[in-house]
Image (tube, rainbow, N blue to C red; front, side):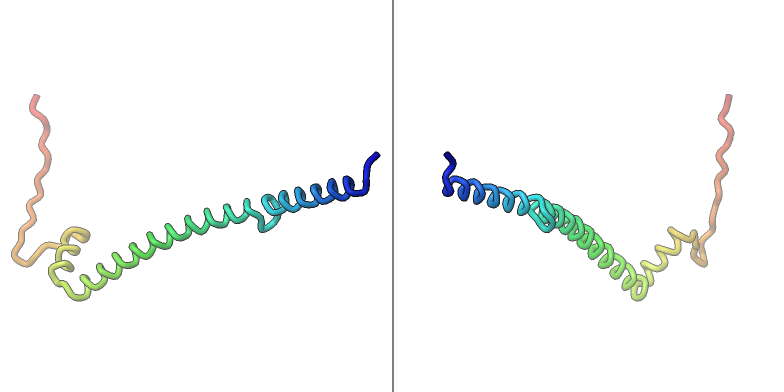
Length: 98
């Protein structure tokens, strides 16, 4: 014969087990917490990368504003600009001798 205490004990165990399952897998449970922490870590890494890129761009802007030699170097390398007293000599690649 099943006693009233055994029924209450079984019911309490079922309720506690259900709460445990809900805590782990339910909305705002441990699985969501893990997912959110992973997303946060990814966003922190992206944020750090963007901060470094912004700092690099800021430094380049400052050099472009204040360093004439750097501006000249950029103009030469990126735009192909030459100086006043410079001459450009283009060399054609010849045919190979047979």
